[in-house]
Length: 77
Image (cartoon, rainbow, N blue to C red; front, side, top):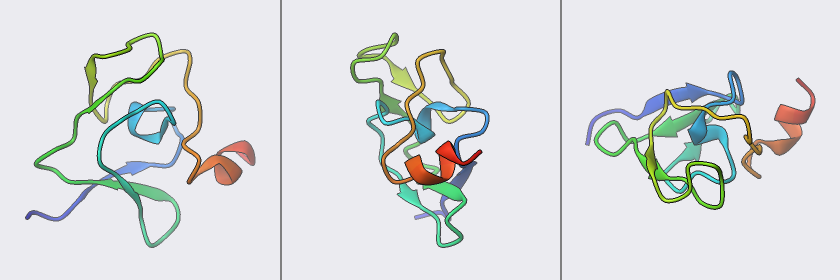
């Protein structure tokens, strides 16, 4: 497995930092990055405006909801 791809926390409200995103992710050790497996960076949107479609780390939308793992950090920004 390759090293994970990182997405900055909550900015600019990309899909992997959204509660509705169904891809595989984990919070980085620094608490600021969301790490994705570069071989599997897509996830389905669940109950959002793109419901059911595959969304990647560069996608975003106007109904972003902070992922529960990052919610306290996102609210303080």
